[in-house]
Structure formats: structure tokens, C-alpha cells
Length: 85
Image 1 (cartoon, rainbow, N blue to C red):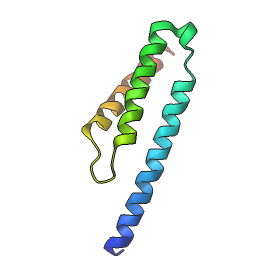
Image 2 (cartoon, rainbow, N blue to C red):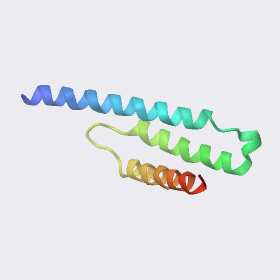
Image 3 (spheres, rainbow, N blue to C red):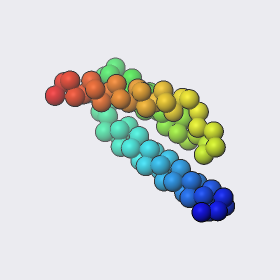
Image 4 (cartoon, rainbow, N blue to C red):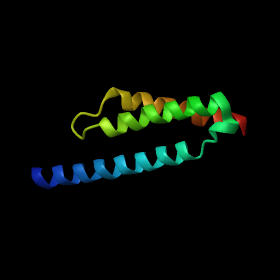
């Protein structure tokens, strides 16, 4: 592949990844019941909102370290939910 084609492919993959991330975060946020979930639901919403802002701000050529922070936060949440099961 020439350099131009590679850049187009990378940009497309990044855009798709960003779109999927935003969709996943939206699903997580809208599944929260703030009234019944209380402080836990509000805190989860804040975590998801932080991650959403990081994804929105990420650029293909300069993905911030805060994306790694989000990945680690979400991994910890997944582990916690799996422990509860």
C-alpha cells in the first residue's frame, strides 16, 4: 500500500472505532437509572461522561493517555460486575 492509502485506511479505522466507542458509552449512560441507582448511578454516569469527552477529544495522530485511563476504568468496572455475578 502506498502512504496515502495507508493514511486513509487508518483514518477510517479510527473513525469507526470512535463511533463504536461513542455508541457503547451512550448505551452505558442511558441504561443507568439515576433515581433508583442513587450515588452509584451518578458516579458511573460521571465516569462514562469523562470517557465520552476523552473519546471526542481524541485525534487519530495523537490519542491522549487519558484514553488509556478510560480503558483501565472500564476494565475495573467489568471486573467488579463479573465478581458480583
